[in-house]
Length: 233
Image (cartoon, rainbow, N blue to C red; front, side):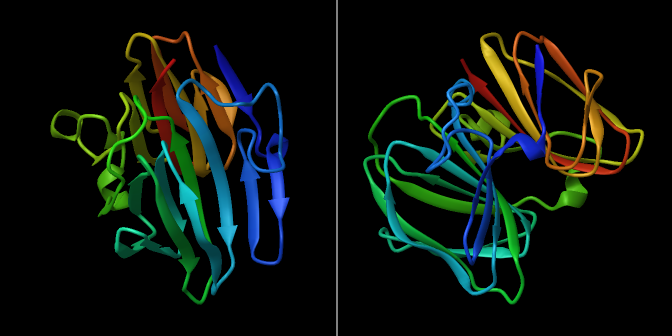
């Protein structure tokens, strides 16, 4: 089963510095049929104005992955971590038993990013944060693991769940296939470009919610960049 989630159907929030689209119920947006997808709880498509951002706020018991598409985001937290994550890089924050952090766009241009929240396999644990570079050129024609529950085997940054976050760039006409783990489902979004997922057409920033498919094949009908999450039911 593949359900297309068109960009225009997503929840919306806008103020003077944030233009956000919500794939799932979040904040003031509530959609009973979009409360999550397996262990995936949040997928926000954010545009953050220059010299603006999220002031310090708390999180707990959530794996938060930030995929920067354009610009950069600067992070500070209550553990003393500070870092700047630029386009092509990914950061992961395991909120664990509790952490406070801020995220600001300190650049002179708008920053665009996906922020993805995944429920951990168990509550609690020491909070943590890390970032790494994943150049888009190294992802041409293949799905690269950006985060996983077993980095030593599967690669990517550590998340505390039997889940994987992938990124890929495809030239027009290229295809890539992925076989799902038993009992898992997939959610993917095109950051740019257009393509097909098992024949279902997607445009830029559209998504596909996928379950009960053993194998998915993604075909680029135009040059595209995608982010995909595989999570347990």
